[in-house]
Length: 146
Image (cartoon, rainbow, N blue to C red; front, top):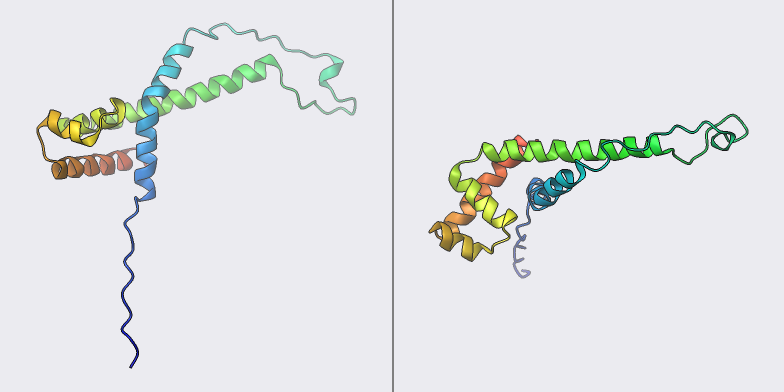
């Protein structure tokens, strides 16, 4: 008889939704800062439409260059998308329990290591991991990432 096959153990990997939630949580402070800094800039951009011959490619089609108005519109759309995500994340954070929110804020916004988060909140590391996992699951559901 042949040797018994050893069962292969599969290492645990983070689910994709968890990676996405963690990415948004890490990016949140920077997204918020970027939209706050840009609010006063571009209030009254230069929106001068250009209708000269250079914008028409001779054959009746438009050229590939964009006008300042189009560039401004693209910037506004990108900023609007960032604002939308900031609001969605803030609304999702409001739905968390105080313990869950504390772990998330200290871990992702303050950038503290888990050991320090646990000592500040006076909880064990296992409890901290459970609270964080529960919070990320809630956030994934609220943000439609799960």
